[in-house]
Image 1 (cartoon, rainbow, N blue to C red):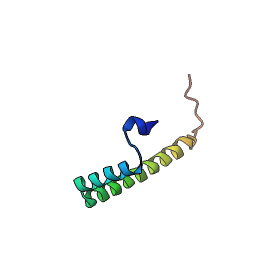
Image 2 (image 1 turned 180 degrees about the vertical axis):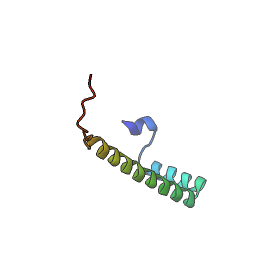
Image 3 (image 1 turned 90 degrees about the vertical axis):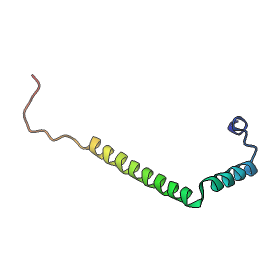
Image 4 (image 1 turned 135 degrees about the vertical axis):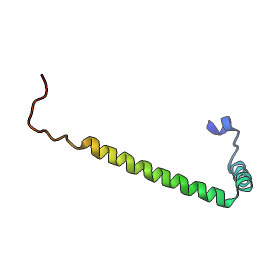
Length: 68
């Protein structure tokens, strides 16, 4: 369904698009983009797991009742 909407007929079309992108941007730019994307995903996962740990950690009670 999505192939029809995008006009991608098969692997040949995808290969042609990949070659055009490689010619436009060059191999080093694509490699840099991949590295940046990988670092961003890694940082996002680290932040997501640290926020889950903070959310799951119970808040210590000091014994006073502040509800009035």
